Image 1 (spheres, rainbow, N blue to C red):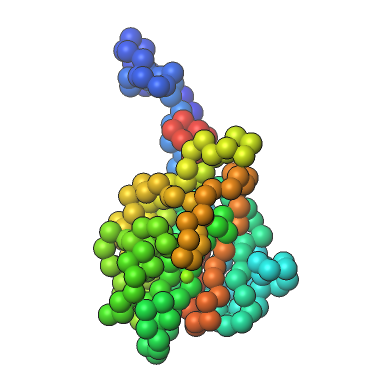
Image 2: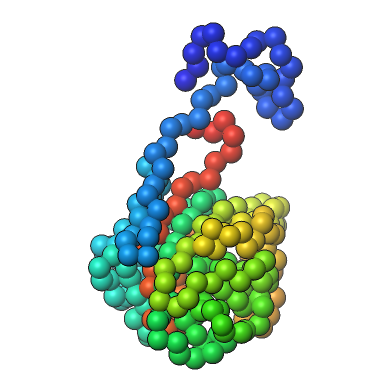
Length: 250
Ligand code: MG
C-alpha cells in the first residue's frame, strides 16, 4: 500500500519497470511470517503464505499416479513412508513456478548399493525428477546421485546426511513454457540440499527418463508433485510450496 511522503518522484525510471528509483508508490512487499525450521526430532512449520501438501496427518491431498486411487503409503507420527508396491503418489493439487520444501529420511538399516539404496524421487510436475537416494558412503553414477536432476546433472556437491537422519530439499522451480507444441522456454531449477546449493538455476534438458534423453513434450504450466515408490522405505514430512512470483506481483 502506498503511503504519502515515502520516496521520491523526481528520479529516473528503472529499466524494465514502470517505477522510479526510490518510488514511494511502488507496491510494498507483503508481510510473511517465517516458518519454524524442523529439527531431527520434530517436524517444523511452513511460512504463513505456504500451501501445505503434507502436514504429517493424512494423505487426503494425494492419490496414486496410476489410477487416481487413494494413496497407499503409510502415515505415522508426522511422516509418510513408502509402502513398496503401492506405486508412486502425487498431489491432487497442481501448481507451477514455486518454492518447494520437502524433507526426507533414508532407512537407518543400510541395504543395497548404488541406485538400490534408499531410492525414491521428487518429481516436479510429475515429470522432472530430483533424485532421492542414500549416497552417504554409497557410490553411484554421478547424474543419479542424491539431489541430481536424474539422468541430466549431478549435484554440485554431495551434501548427504547419514541414513536415519532427516534431510531437506529447498527447490526453486520455473516450469517450462510452450506455445502450442513448441518449447519457448525450458525449465530451470535451483536446489538446496540440507541448506547447501547443489543446482544454481540449472536449465533442464527435458523430462526424466532412464538411459535415454527425452525431448520436452508440451504440457500445462501447472502439474502435480509426485513422489516415487522405488521399493525402498523412504520417509517424507513437512512438504509445502509457495507460488513463485515476479517483482511487483501481488
Ligand atoms: Mg529415484
